Image 1 (cartoon, rainbow, N blue to C red):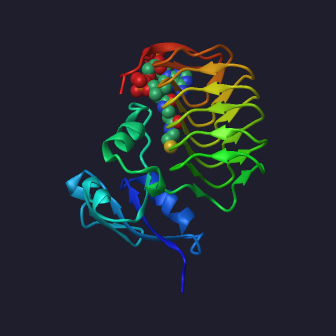
Image 2 (cartoon, rainbow, N blue to C red; image 1 turned 60 degrees about the horizontal axis):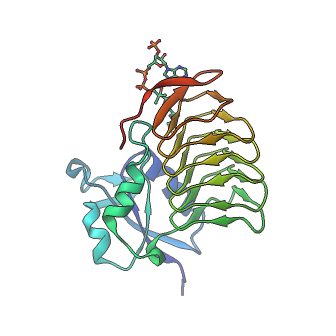
Length: 217
Ligand SMILES: CC(C)(COP(=O)(O)OP(=O)(O)OC[C@H]1O[C@@H](n2cnc3c(N)ncnc32)[C@H](O)[C@@H]1OP(=O)(O)O)[C@@H](O)C(=O)NCCC(=O)NCCS
């Protein structure tokens, strides 16, 4: 008899497909049963063999574990807002660590967090809840990562970097040691961040400079 836990993926886009591919490598832990998406056009669709069952409200009517698989640089706080709206108890959130991720012994990975292939956490530290680290993200000694942070692929942090709740680090961005990224801030792809980024702002470039205020959502 399998002890694998039934799992619902929230979101019907590319990130959900990637998380699905990860959990399919962990059949002893997870048994994906469907995806939920508030876009009714996706209901009934096939997500790489997984049915899109309906809207996110269905998460409340089952005991399955749930992982939120949405990430958007234009709405960096979107995943945390969705988590709050779903209002599930902490034991319902699935933490998904791809077997090819490398997480230091003693590191704490929060509920609902996803680490995809090649993500590396080099030393014991705490990653918040509902963090998403896409492939080949690098998180190093003494970093502090708040809830709902998104790291697009190959984003990397030097040591002692603080990343506030719901910040979004674009693909291939790099953050100098000791720097702080404020809550809900966005760092553009390929950026090299040498100075603190205030909460809610959008920064990009090498060296990264302020592009504009964020959307606040
Ligand atoms: C930073 C970002 C959110 C800005 O998006 P946006 O508000 O739509 O910005 P625009 O594309 O309208 O660009 C606005 C200006 O910023 C510049 N810019 C945008 N992104 C930049 C980046 N990453 N690095 C340097 N400059 C950038 C543009 O060239 C443009 O400059 P201009 O006004 O002189 O022409 C977006 O470009 C980005 O990097 N998103 C993350 C992408 C990513 O990591 N995807 C992973 C998917 S899994």
